[in-house]
Length: 298
Image (cartoon, rainbow, N blue to C red; front, side, top):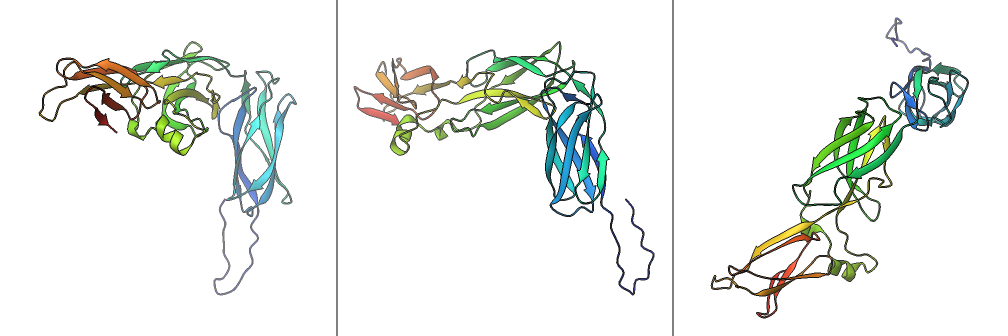
């Protein structure tokens, strides 16, 4: 909106700035029954904390919810929930009112699509090692083929502070999504708290094997946040050779590995002092040679 000023510059003048709504739009080109839809409103010359009222409607007279809030920075964004019972084929829009200013506007009209149905979210493996390629898949109903989907992988945390690991873009094909992901642990396993450490400082907690789940993000809505995909575990390995101070191997010696989860694993070194163990809980490990009274590691 262009403002012209054609008065003299050597005097003080009062100018009245009119409040207005620049635009009111849905974030996407369509909305889905049973889902939340993101909306955005941009205004001009509306004071901080100005009241805004938004009323969602359909062209066939269905109610799509209301929002009463405040505007800051001449902008507002929020979500309207599209009811499950709204039938596809109808069109959705919303009305905006700026309370006390006498300003209102109507948004663009977008088609209402069927409810998004997500099922069979799963990994093709329940355990993974470094370098393993995992296949993630899910069935998706209510969206058209080639709809964009973001597959988001999280590391699960018992306290609910799940860490986002990666986001993989893909598209719906034949009502399904399917992506592959090569697994690598993103941190040092020495940073994983062991059972012994947790019992010393936090008796109510126990060792947690790193686990992962994934979600699907469609039209700004994220599905699967209750770990519907199931959790897969990271399993590590240990490959080692034990030598005497003289450089000779501890040939054919029995060993015990004290593992991060508080359990142990037993085995025997070969003639070159070499040992290898697979499918271990990741984290700090200690190797003991009972007959020699030697301890390797922390």
